[in-house]
Amino acid sequence: MQKRTAAVFAITIVLTLSCKAQSSSVLSVCELIRNPDKWESKIIAVKGTIAIPTDGVIGGMGTFLVPLPTERCSYSDSRHVSADEAAAVMLDVPDYHFRRNPPLGFSLNEYSFTWAADRLRKMQSENPSARQATVIVDGFVSLRKYNLRQLEREVEENNLRRPEHTFPPVIVTLQSYRSVEVR
View 1 (tube, rainbow, N blue to C red):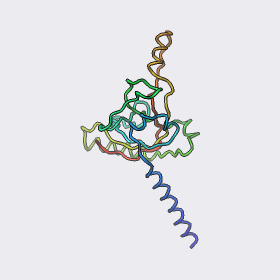
View 2: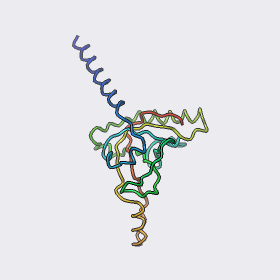
View 3: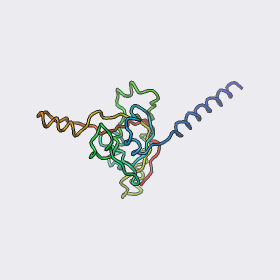
View 4: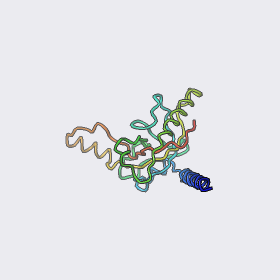
């Protein structure tokens, strides 16, 4: 009887935590970039559009989440960016250092990466003309703390070497892929 009670209790906890994680509100890309400071250092769920990768890579440099076709927004109000930067959020894969010391509440679901990549490959094979997918991802928000245009002016004015890598204004370090749908 005690084993059965313990099993029921454990299942109840797992289901409760699972439902809680899935029921959290989902931001749009535009909601995220309109107020990036509000979401910095928080774990969020965000919905947007990604290009279906031809190489199977679904996170890291060059993987961006952009607004859904029905949304229009820009970074024009942010102090960290220039108004002419595209409304896009980089989806980053947690590196070794991030994984060794993750933020409180961050729980990497590596299976979801495999699932999402497989789903995108299947979508591509079933519909070769599909180029984009709508996704919901969970992840940790980081902000670039410099204005790119200002940095470029300083480099030019002071005859400095231009940085090889610059980051986009908002970066979401992926915790999991929640859903993937063809557009």
